[in-house]
Each structure stands twice: as structure tokens, then as C-alpha cells.
Image (cartoon, rainbow, N blue to C red; front, side):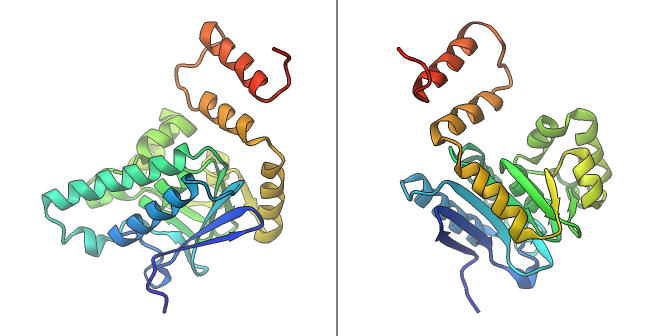
Length: 239
């Protein structure tokens, strides 16, 4: 059995990052977070890819979140490190200048959902189930999930997801806006999305992502100048 908790493969100008802990439904511990960070640093430092795809090993789960057995053995200092590291890694995913896709097969719960929320796009199988069960354990989503949920679906729906701790099937997840698409044929759906994203100029994608993630963005002043600069960088305006 492969002892690596992350498998990173490169094919056709894409990076495929697989959460590799299928016996425990790809739950996330320190080792997986460290290996995930290493893979992201490798991509940041110049491996030429146009898109990054995150998947879970096996057919039962994307990830069921934090490894609770490991988490419950941590002392206070280690628990703080755990929370800080998870935020650091998921922030790296969110701030990558290239498209990121989470392919949700089966369960995406707790920290697994938080990882998926840090991606630009989420596509799920018809049997995908999403959940934020942390409150039932007596703590909060600690890897950025609450902020990303509120930003993504609004305060009312974010409260529904976090405070009710329900298991949300694919259809309702699509309705809530937690996933973008449900696929019956993963390979075909993913290929179409990846091929489309590869046609977008990397500089344009990066600038659009920066603008869309700015909560204070307006239609005045420097924000308009940003749009003009983006056009110049893309080579569509003569200086």
C-alpha cells in the first residue's frame, strides 16, 4: 500500500492531486496537510500546468475531514498548529493563480468540504454528500469553511449548512450553490471543464480571480483602472 497521503500526477498540462487515505475515507491529518503543501509549492514554483484537479482515492469519499483519532490526541499547542497549517494550505489552494477543481465522489464532510470550498469549481457525482458536522463535535469549522461558505452562498444558507449539520445530497448541494455541476460521467464532464479552462489566457484568469475575490470591489476609481490594466496585460488595448 502506498504510504503517501497525497499522490500528485501531471498529465496533459494538468496536475491531479489525489487524497490518498481511502481506508479512512481520505480523512486529513498532519501528514496529508504537509504533503499537500509540498505539492502546491511545487506547482507554485513553476511546474507548467493550466489547471489543478483534486480528487479522493477510492469511490466512497472525497474526504470525510479531519482525522478525529489523530486530532483528539493533540495537546493544545499541537491543536493550534493543526488549525494554522490547515488554513495555510487551503489559503494556498484558494490563491493559486490557475483554475482549481474539486471532484467530489461520495462524502465531502468537515475539513473535506472546507478543502473543496477553497477550489474555484466543484463538480460532484450523483451520490455526493456534503456536510459540515463540526458543531456536533463541539467545535467550529477551523480551516476557513465558515468564511468561504458565507461568501459563496450568503449568510442564511451558510447558517443552514454549519448550524444544522445535515448531510446534504448532491441535488440540494447544487441548489444551494455548494457545487457547480453534477456529473453522471465524471471523465466526460471533467474533460469538458478542463479543456474550456485551458483556453483562457492565464493572465486573464488570474486577474479575474483577484477581482472576484475582492469583497470591497466597486464600479468606480481604481477598480475601473484595474479592468483597463487587465485589458492592457491581455494585449487587447493599444497603450
